[in-house]
Image 1 (cartoon, rainbow, N blue to C red):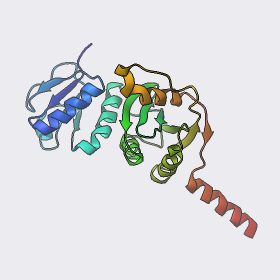
Image 2 (image 1 turned 30 degrees about the horizontal axis):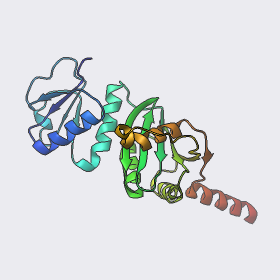
Image 3 (image 1 turned 30 degrees about the vertical axis):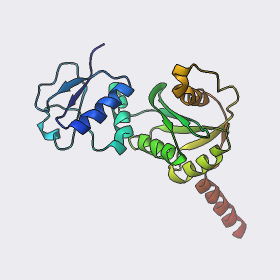
Length: 223
């Protein structure tokens, strides 16, 4: 398999985070100096904003901070798939009492996955993933498993922080949890989240949409 990503930075902290991300999403890479020649076959170079002007290449992504690492992962995935945008994205969530599994599938391919330790972390991660998604052309659906009562608080938070165009769907978790080996224990919630993405559930009525319909009804009654 040809290597399609190059990391060109002299900044140790940035290099550490970029490389960890690439290993996590299973992407091979070249390690270069910012002014090195870019090997044939590379589709994108990742560097820092301060070093970007030194890199002589057409397609460059920059690492700014650890908080934006999910955005960088999404940008890499789009470029490596030769796409300008996704047509369909499904985000599966397996809420747990302690750990919440999260997976993002875009046009049939996994582009992000994580174990989150709080509702806030889960919402933040989803918001970061969506920063690079054009909602006018990409259909996004978030499916939340209902296996634990915490899903109710989570879906209310998602309703508040996510754009109105995104569909929220509550899915039965029956049959999504299976025994796993000790080696795969950290993947248990992610595996369940993956199964949740393929389930059909009940659409959650967004609060803004609900208020809009109530307003329309009120206007009709006053006419």
